Image 1 (cartoon, helix red, strand yellow):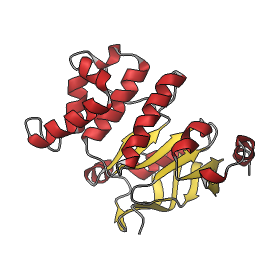
Image 2 (cartoon, helix red, strand yellow):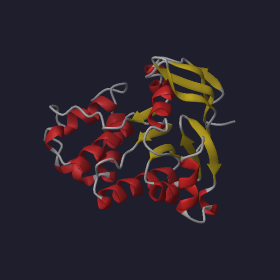
Image 3 (cartoon, one colour):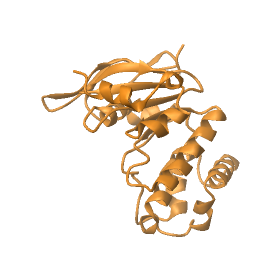
Image 4 (tube, one colour):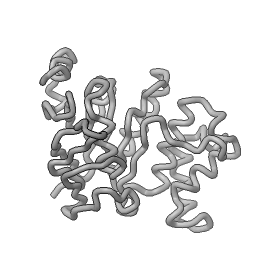
Length: 236
């Protein structure tokens, strides 16, 4: 039984079907990459899973069908999204952003302190900037904060939409290595990424999207060259 699975999940923007009926699965403890060019439907897939766009089909978590348009229901079960663009609250402090991630457990609890200690151990730069306004930090630090805030919710599965967008290669590598470490500790991950080499170094499996549909499921260990992946991107 998969931890999370979609069944014929599709999504539209107006009359445009941005995501055709799609089946994916993520096993407990698995790291799955979703790859594809701009406009392939990767972000739409993440938003449809979370119920953030009008959709059809189903999302199953531990074999239970979840409400299609209820992001809070998914979050309460531990399905957490780090959106493209990070979605942090710029005028608020780093500490306040992190607190929002753990709003279900409350600020003055042992569980909160345990989660905060874990996040600050993973991202020491956040500890140095707890009182700083989030919007004044660098792009890489803001992405660390976005991931940290998601971890404060104690996810069972973490969905990340283009975490490398706009970041320097060194910072991207640092953040993705942290995600790899979290996965080795047992956290399930779905990573949407354009930079296939980075994602495939971490992933157990990968789905390739093109024109709103899955065109291939691959084992990263069997990829001989990234040229063969690029050919899938232009499949019709």
